[in-house]
Image (cartoon, rainbow, N blue to C red):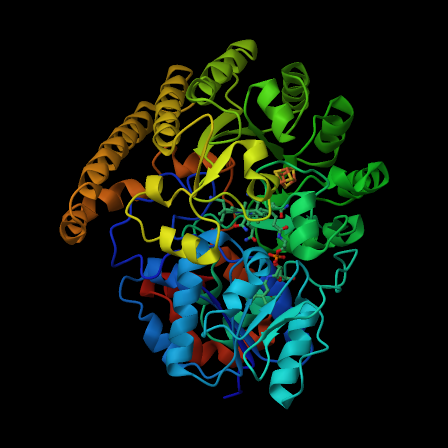
Length: 598
Ligand code: B12
Ligand code: SF4
């Protein structure tokens, strides 16, 4: 068996979430993941592909997904049996502050001499503090690290000095932290396969395991894929850790790097081969300017695109744009994060700072031009938003439904800014200006915050307009009202309505019960919380909306995980042939039969 050079481990948000009773509430309700945040950063596939192209053996293990899939999955046993030259752990999203450090500790427990490297936006922000933990040896900073990790593993393999590797933070022989200059900031994203689905597919065969690289729990049933159009953003929204000022601070990036239209089209055509599932185009590609936009739209029209494509809108749009999408694509949908229906609040936060008239014109134009689904997201906990401001978002949803005569293509979501305020965002850096009171600022405070029993206590902030209690309460109240609105307008059926209504009311009750337990002496709390475990687990699976509401409607059979595997056999015939007899891919019998049938 070949020696593995790097093993990437994607941690759960909290380790070991299976043993605790934590009421995570709606913190992950509007993303495909569960509160374990099992989705790994797409970029680690690009790093893996780059390294493999350079002759290194790289494996990705999605520990979070494996732990969710199998209650008895033994992380310590898995790590103990690994013997790579280097472990790599992502701390991209701060909610992994707990799981990432615990996984690093386990790596060091069984392999004290194997270096552990961290990377991702949060790791970059907290690089110095992170190196203070004895289980962390290196932090690779920045948003484009493929080349840096290549240089690092080369150094590790050949015992070379690391002092000249850009973007690297490390500890010298005296234990002092050294931060090499953050100078490697590529100005485009065409230099590597980003993300690399080919790597993911190939690794299924190479390591004879399908589940290690599955991105989220439901993926094998609903395998949506995503493409990233840019790293960085032209906008500077106050609460976004991916804003232009945050990228400047964390990644030394002055302007976004884009993937060119030609390469993006190749990516789409490749994904099309894998199945008919929707392809989500992340970030608004119009940020790259009118020339880029025209080229991308005309290439989309020239190619025979069959899959549904989903676009994010950061700015309003009209008939010219939507007309072109309708002309180029058989199916498309859009997503808009409005955050608030109140113009004053949007303006203050820099998020879609245009009038509601402009927003409504955009919706009207998209609907007129055959857009299949419009997801509109509202948020609770944003600066200058009172309880009434948050809850009245549902009145605006009703207004829109009346204006567009009960249009069923409009899908509304309200979710809290949770669990944390993004490090590096304007509000994190300048809390007074944005009216934030922060309960946690350091990495260690966030790590400990994740061990609290409910999302109210995990929440890292409150604002001058709402306390933590009000943020929680306004989220549930808005969700109850929105759920009723969706039922009244026939957007959801009565069964789903009743299920969500029950979950929200139950969640509210649990929050209150936990509050009461928190008033007891500390010695009594643990036992009382454990008794609530079953109840808590029931509402941790999507409280305030149905996960299916996030899906794009499927009129025909979309590719599922198994059809992805069928295509794989075609794309990687040699690997399939070589590994078939011994692999079984660690599938269940049903899964194995389904693959074999193909
Ligand atoms: C796309 C995106 C998503 C996608 C995820 C796609 C994916 N699998 O990566 C979706 C929509 C699912 C999502 C979800 C969430 N997101 Co998000 N997301 C973004 C967005 C818009 C772009 C990210 C991006 O450009 N990535 C590209 C680059 C930066 O990353 P990358 O290519 O994946 O990885 C490179 C580097 O980061 C680094 N790297 C990453 N990991 C590692 C690991 C190692 C070991 C090394 C060496 C290097 C390394 O090297 C990679 C290759 O060069 C940003 C906003 C923005 N403008 O940045 C928010 C952002 C990253 N998300 C954010 C948050 C908070 C979340 C959620 C927690 C929200 C929630 N409560 O549900 C969830 C987490 C989901 C999960 N893990 O299960 C915050 C993060 C703030 C923070 N520091 O914690 C951001 C900054 C802004 C925001 N609020 O949305 N997100
Ligand atoms: S919220 Fe969206 S538009 Fe605003 S800075 Fe973040 S990524 Fe850019």
